[in-house]
Length: 149
Length: 177
Image (tube, rainbow over all chains, first blue to last red; front, top):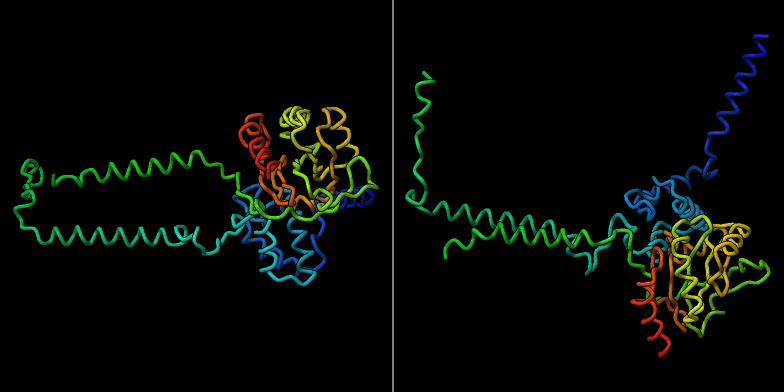
């Protein structure tokens, strides 16, 4: 009796596990790894802060399947990326290409940093040249003297 | 006169505020489509109401037409639907539906219940043509000119305002061309 119950329980557990397990996305783990590697640098358009590799949105599943088909047919990563940008624009690339419209994106932060450093140096050099009379005299604080001794 | 630089923080603040204010108005979901001003992708699909009739992109050459991507599971399509129905009645442009990732039965049932504004609907069961059109948020609307070039793309529901301010002027200019 007890044995029967245990067997039944094990069977139920196995069924349960089977019901929850995701079907393997592809029989070929090497292909799957390449799909995921490329998808990790592509933006999912449905949930824009996720990559195509992370997203479970229907469109992301479809696009990963499309990538599998393309890679199986011998396409390389560049061709897959071009396929995506032709349809969804450069926005899908987490590494935007360097072109006229993205110059500010690529070099803006560096320009700001250099500008900031230049201003800082200019201010410091000017202050260095000024005599002591341009600064407020150091105030010696006498109010707390009684407390320290 | 020497103290003009004290205004610098104020100027910086105004500049930053202007950028942020502009940022509030931008919708990150409105991604400019690379398809606009390019030839519409080729497709070959059966009609939703007739699996034996295949429609190809080039069948549509020579006239201005509108492609509207919809699905029976799409909530926003319900919102958009009355606008499409009344726009179709005006006869301004043939509207072709792209029934996206749906089933024939549910798609046809939806049209029977809510009205059918479409000259015809094409059945894109797997969403493969949707991918070629860069569809990522149903409903989407395209206007395609006589040469088969995409001239307009909208993500999200059409509204009477959009039809009056964008679609009708565009159709007028395309009709004259």
